[in-house]
Image 1: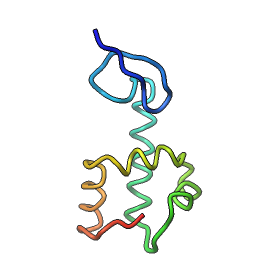
Image 2: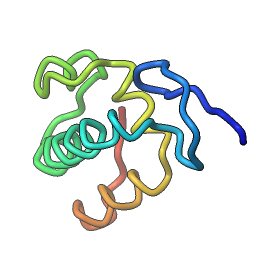
Image 3: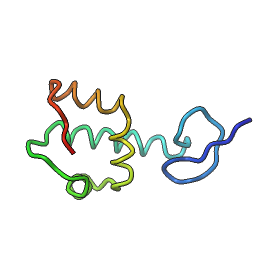
Length: 85
């Protein structure tokens, strides 16, 4: 059995995911909130600005923005407009 360290809270757990079962709902909520923010954002925004606007920790924003599936979903919502962070 392989253990992984949760990218969000740091606890060890056994799964194929990178986030533990306790943190998964928080991640899903924050990803939805970030997607909504980026979809409705008219101007360029820094990670710090996004964090202030959403209440999401900067490290989580960076982690979400490195998720290719997340970026594809945001681009689809914005009609394939490029995302500049």
